[in-house]
Image 1 (cartoon, one colour):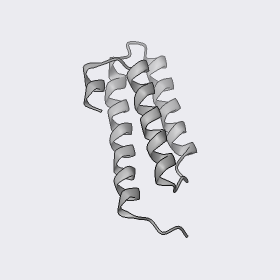
Image 2 (cartoon, one colour; image 1 turned 30 degrees about the horizontal axis):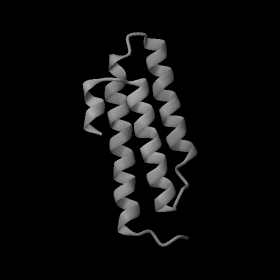
Image 3 (spheres, one colour; image 1 turned 90 degrees about the vertical axis):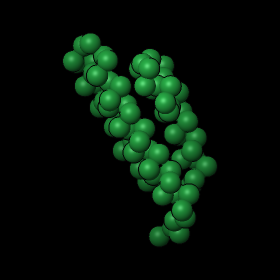
Length: 81
């Protein structure tokens, strides 16, 4: 079992915050089907990467997800990330 540092747990909270933000921002997508597909896509990305333990890789994934959310969901909320 890897030795988790404080940084790991802080990054975990950032991922949760990012996920909640994506869910809130998705309400601005007018098509319900597109909205549910966007949420499912984002959730699958988190599930796919949930076993990562390297803090640097996790930070890169968070930054990439943040950019993707800003491109896909251009809302005033996106500026708070």
